[in-house]
Image 1: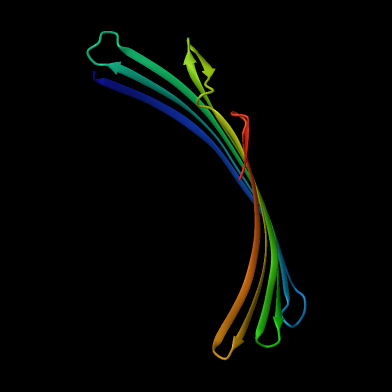
Image 2: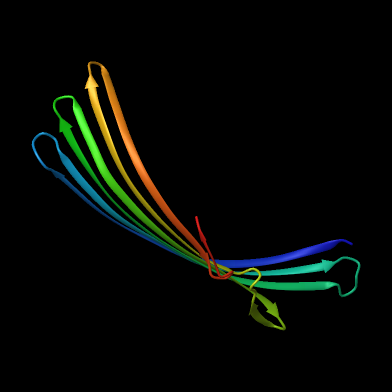
Length: 178
């Protein structure tokens, strides 16, 4: 059996993004010791709506027309926070020490709601809908030492990092810790 699909889709999107950055830099002495700090915030928001109207026409069968109407709302929120500090200290004429911590937090809230037309009214479609919340925390610190010996630049460093994540789907009533 041959089938003809006639699809009419329409949608709209509302997107809002904002960022904030604070930066601080100070020279602590005349030997080149520098302290810097930075705070960042990012907010990403979007709301997308779409309507899908799909007509399925069975070729060769009288009155063999099926029309599916599907609507969705997709809301996404992302909040990103970050903070870091760096200390650079000149050691003698040829050495330099750099140390610093960094922390960040991400909160993502994504909700996808589908609706299907039943008896002329749009009804929630739980099989296609999902609400997922993701949280991530990262903590890091580093230390680096560099030194010039004749024509060579030597550098050694160490970085430690810890990441904690949690994902929650409220639709399936589950929590996943990664």
